[in-house]
Image 1 (cartoon, helix red, strand yellow):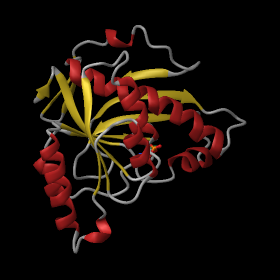
Image 2 (cartoon, helix red, strand yellow):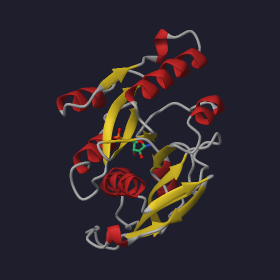
Image 3 (tube, helix red, strand yellow):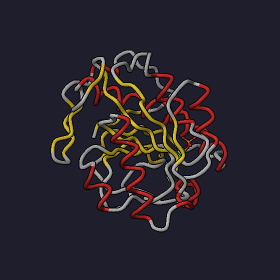
Image 4 (cartoon, protein in one colour):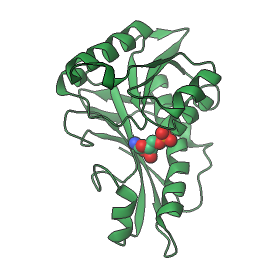
Amino acid sequence: MSRADGQLKIAVLISGRGSNMQAIANHAGGHCTGYKICLVAANKPAEGLSVASEAGLPTTLIDHKKYNSKKEHEAALAEAIEASGASWICLAGYMAVLSADFIARFEGKIINIHPSLLPEYKGLHTHDRALADKQKFHGVSVHLVTPVLDDGEVIAQMRMPVKNVDTLESLSARVLVLEHILYPLVIGALASGAVTLDTGQVHWQDTSITNTLSLPEDTTLIFG
Ligand code: GRF
């Protein structure tokens, strides 16, 4: 695992507003120390790139429309990530499915945040589906990325009750609050060695990092 200045170097991949990227950046100096964002990359013009630039983070737009094939686009993306010195890749609303070749190039070093309690609701529209199914609980997962979409080992989850009065807006807003707590926490745990991922298996060595965490009411943190 390569570290600079004693810090885990991460690349964050986005496609949109980048609120998770911002939460990761905000916590880099807070209770989840030990990591540093060395690149924010987007595959299309994304609001989050300006947010990252304003925060003084290195950014790059590797626009998929400017490449003849997915293979060429991913090669450019991989080169930018390697040049940044990142040893981990954090997908944060990156709206493209990575190829098996790309994932193999960074094997065991790519994680993603997904707005559901995996394995429930892989793919899109997770909040609508949870509401339609009248689920009692919903939440968010951070998981290892494998070639099968949203299928890699879960590292940690946050679960909360769905309220009778919940709408798509209220539910997605409450899940987003959890996302912004969970993602920096997991990256901080990877940086400190509190969690290790050994050939695709998650091992929590130390869960005490959560002792000082204040979670929204009725929220449960689940270690993978
Ligand atoms: C989040 O809900 C994340 O879980 C999903 O895409 C959304 C990205 O939001 N993968 P943001 O760009 O981080 O605000």
